[in-house]
Image (cartoon, rainbow, N blue to C red):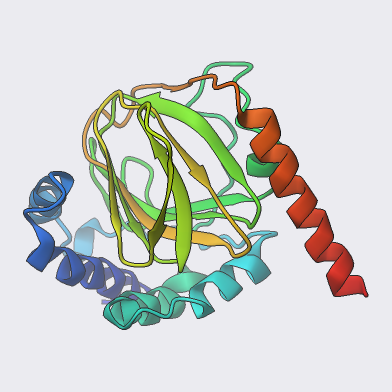
Length: 236
């Protein structure tokens, strides 16, 4: 087994160790553990793809370094070790219909890498995606939905979420966010990058849809002012 394969597998195993004692809450954890159990991670099935870095490498490195919760230390260490082995991609709207607009902040800084999935850099699975997802500071990931039920593990210190028709709520590091199939959800990132483990648990090739909300302009204006204010403070 190559060093790269060991490091990527170690990251997947660290995610499994975190999830195992939490299998009853929320509902997606048990399905995630079943998907992991059925994924064939033998040595010959490893997709040995050339690694690919990103223009957001400095933000990603900072986001990993900011993982502070003690129960996330195992994942943080394994992610730091495997970071240079992974294929890091920006969303090019491949999962959305033409013309879908996720917002300027999202376009400015988003990043993901798949550890397991149809097009992963680790192991193949036809109907399961497990990976790492990042958004830059001061970003609104606009309301959207998809037929794939989704589970997030928040690695960063805090992030804002709007689930369904509910209001905004901040969630701390180590929290699990469950998005049932078809449920609208949005993410609001504050002053630090949002870093997470995510899983699409089935229907992974179904398209996504943006769900318009009338408060986007105000949220994005506030986030943009915070973004530019932080940049100006850095200059001063």
